[in-house]
Length: 399
Ligand code: NAP
Ligand code: MG
Image (cartoon, rainbow, N blue to C red; front, side, top):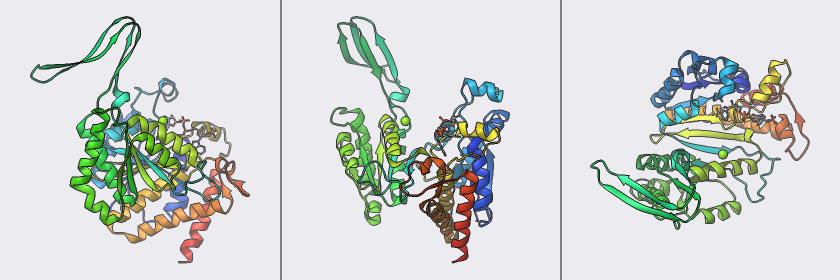
């Protein structure tokens, strides 16, 4: 490796898996260079969360990061860890600094069939993670009255828009978004489609929301025409806009193998549906991509707290490490691509293959054994990682 990976360590059960993955699957084969940031809750508290900010800035500097799942503290965690403060979600902080878009992609396994029969390839959901209903203003109307929306520009000029003449009680909601954020989102989607060489779909409700949703559609169309058309054509892929209702129907009868970009709320809802229909949250990877093409890879699941408490009681757990392994392979492959290091890309490929081969050979963690069609043996995390290590070793030795 010539350039270091930004390594963001995390919490609880995934922190335990992190160590095992490095020791058993990576360090024996890769001359691993990382710039290490401990985003474990203890260190975040000690550094007043500066470590999270530093790790995000390092990602902007080097271009590729791999992140372990981390605890987002709530009141109970503040007590449990004796924290100075209820620190913000590290993912939120990193996303804000990188101005990034989150892409969630399922890992497909022979023997675990998606609920939707036609799906043969992964569907990646790209969710715009800023504004709309997540930053709305809401109002409970308790009786008759007039609701209006006002905008005062920087010179003091006011624009008023009637909303509704209420005859009785009801509710009002006001949403907003920013051009800068929508352009960042669209740029990240086009770049990601080019990097994956997969078609990009985008869908909103522009026929009903003729200004708001239509603006999203216009931004995508403008960037496509002015910036990405030729590159997409050269890569043999397409950009495709359709109304969200039509997109849902098409997704359900598709084969998969594309990126589906969605507004904030649509992406929140649809990504959970897609994840469940593909099998398991433990088989879902997540990549945060900045508009300038910096990448942060992680598993989509959390720190698996319930398993961690069992681990603390001295029990062996069968926690699935696959999404975390694929976060590492995603990051190593991207680092290899950026540095023209084919050997590193080859290693990432070999590790993914060895992981899938192990499961397809009937050895897996408990969560997968429950879904697997065929003879499945449920192993502890450690035994499962040893089985992968065995397959990886033979694959590399036979080359
Ligand atoms: P979670 O850690 O994803 O776990 C929820 C449940 O899903 C687990 O109890 C387990 O079910 C199953 N599961 C998830 N990942 C699994 C795996 N790799 N192998 C096997 N089973 C798996 O979500 P959570 O319990 O809601 O959150 C725990 C902590 O994670 C919270 O402190 C939260 O802040 C944090 N979190 C972090 C991130 C992130 O860093 N990106 C994302 C989400 C949550 P069973 O118990 O039935 O076995
Ligand atoms: Mg959701």
